[in-house]
Amino acid sequence: MALIACRECSKQYSDSASACPQCGARVKKRRLWIWIPLSIPIAFILFAVLRTRAPDEDEKIRARDAIDLCWSKQKTKSFDPSTAQFVARACETMEEDFKTKYHVAP
Image 1 (cartoon, rainbow, N blue to C red):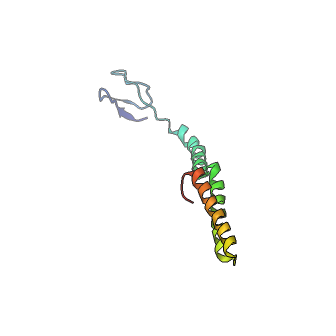
Image 2 (image 1 turned 180 degrees about the horizontal axis):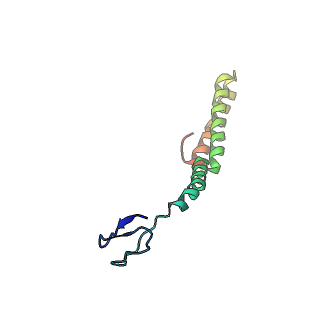
Image 3 (image 1 turned 90 degrees about the horizontal axis):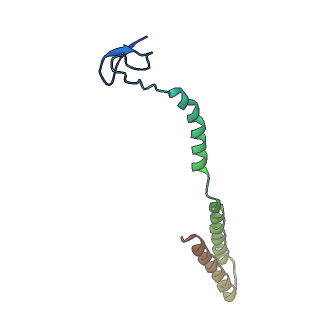
């Protein structure tokens, strides 16, 4: 049993008392033991929330990949000029749709 100083009147009293016997000021008990078990699940939940991507993020990634694939195929294939122009226009349309849907350039 130790003596502690009262915050209000600075008199000393036992740390097991619930209030100062001189002035009646209540002792603030720290309940750290409550927060220790709760902090582990809270940390896991917070980690899961921060690591989870938005539902449309996977769709956005797939759309970007499709646009990149379209342009790479358009450049590497030996198309005749009209077919190359048609594929290029298809790639441009995909980019425009991406910009309209996500409001950013792919």
